[in-house]
Length: 351
Image 1: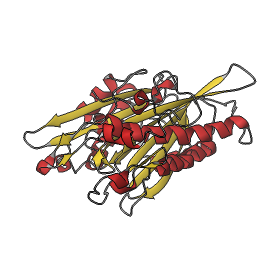
Image 2 (image 1 turned 120 degrees about the horizontal axis):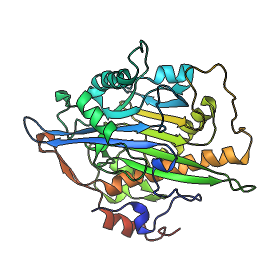
Image 3 (image 1 turned 120 degrees about the vertical axis):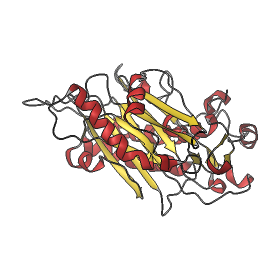
Image 4 (image 1 turned 135 degrees about the horizontal axis):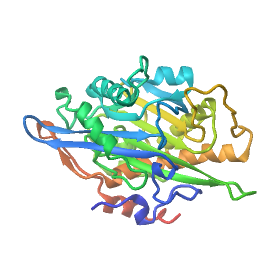
């Protein structure tokens, strides 16, 4: 069983993590996976991951949200309405590129089960391409698989690494998967605390560019193929923020990504999505009392800074946890050699 990077004494930044150092440390957030690994009738190394912003009915109680497109070679569904209206009204699903349409249709089916009168809906489905390991043209995933992931939602611990949407992912020439991290931001003048969590699906980066805590790890390895992938980054918080501010968090995710050495390529779909579950917005409300953290405060700056830390750690965690996998056409992607990496990092471990 592979360990997370913090298990080796490597920390990132100044803020404390939440209880499990996961996006689910944000109260109410839940995560569920469906993983498919099989060799007949063709090679399947794929899956999907669901992020539910809170434990109430998301259609009845949407939440504020925003997004940022770092590079737009992506096939995501639902971002346009999020940017127009500033809310999310369905579970967020991450999956493989050619399954986006089927999963979006499945999200509609899920909402219609409890809301049969719905005639307009904005399913949110994000993607990375797992075709280096998965026979993606088979489009293995649909309604049954989505419903199974929704049945397995957890508000506490959940699997990381080569599971769910991370099953067939490759980053920096090594096997990648699901990564996650969290931060706790405490107000110095009170006992009030806020949480910020991140979930990432890294499928990007050149091996030679990999950096961990400023150490140029990648240059110590023979480089592999040119990157063909993307990255999805989900940011969750219980701090009361409005869509404009959530977009500012999304932009700060680029700083965390850059710290790992990743660079967007011409054919990358690098997408950030952020939401706050502090305010559940009743669909049938007559009015809503809007309270949010002002931009020009120490607390908001801390949320920006915490985003950078959590994104960087989550990406590296995805590499530390993922295991070697062989997939379609016999392609094999090795797990990050942790021992060699830690040896290269001797001077920064514990700092």
